[in-house]
Length: 290
Length: 267
Image (cartoon, rainbow over all chains, first blue to last red; front, top):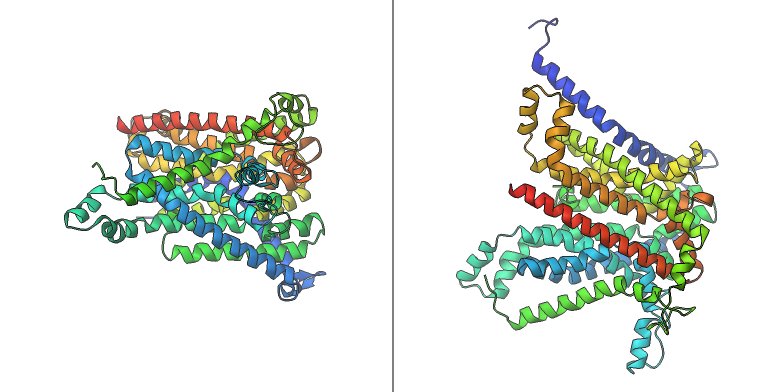
């Protein structure tokens, strides 16, 4: 073959590649312009102080205790929320995956309706429920369980409660998807071989549902790490999370260097979580795109 | 297979029933509060009235914010659908390796903590003069809504047999026509799901709006957030009820749309 008559199949390939890039261009431009460029700028800004290279912004992590406190509290809340969501979400998904279709639709509706309701509205609802004269306190005092209203909101408890409620669907949906794919014949076979229900569950069903549990846990954990609205409204300053640290540094102190370094560290944490999880499960399965 | 009702299973059902109650109460509690006649939130409300709906509908600043939010949500959902569908179609065509990398890139807005995204968008907009503008809000929400469209359409395309499009092309249609007359009708439910998701995500988006919207072009969520931080005004209960009703309506649409997809799959 000579250079003057190019292989038609290669020509076709090249045309296909050009089409792919053309169709992707608008989407990539948006992400590059509004996401990659500013992330690069933040990273660059985080290692500069007064125009010269410096690690001063990162040194503050070691000296200013508010940084460590915010990160520790954020991670603690993220662990609590993830664990609670797994403990509450697993039985819900399990029942939904093992009952007749009409019942499973009802259970999924109870998960999906809140999921579709505005995060702001649900945060507001928890404020109404948990405040000093809220529904929960009124109920507890009227039934004589407690004498004095409890402080349920404007602290870590209120934040954690609402966060679990808001993020639970992100746990249940991947779990349900994984469990639905488990062929019922497998558990039946386990039972016909003489396995008691508990044993069949432990040796057959549970291991097969693990990918769903990993996907759900990663999503909930990462989303909690970056949570902002709910802790801001329900935390009362006592649930001080990393997002709030970033927001304060910009809105109140106009401290771009500090905000940049915190953003970079938070982002590294998120990437690490995904990286670690991808050792167990491919990224596109975590995100539910495969 | 009928299951025996063992004590363990009964306990499981009881637990799930309680969990469902806990899931639904915060969604259902706001509506009765919104019809309260009291100046402050109390449950049960001492009397009933529509005064909080009135105070929402009669307030020009709430109305303006509502218009801004609806404009932004509709436009950004439509644009995200257009460029997200194009991107998904291309990803489905691209080699596995390339598609893998690009997909991670396109899903970034879902993965990066929203505060960091908000700070980044604020930075860019401050430099190009898009702060507190409707086009700026639309652009930001296009980015945030696109991943839903890409994901949903990709799922649809994977179930679609690409040979059909090739047949159409071998019969003389050009690629564009083959896409619109053969491929799109079959993946339409996935496209519609993606659009609805993008719409809801834009209507509900708060954090980016807090940073980049303001003045005349304040979104509903930003105004709600600020109002909630200052005081609990029952007007928000009325507005919340309306928002929840909207989401339920959209969810019903989505369910109908999914049934259409299931019927198509069965054919």
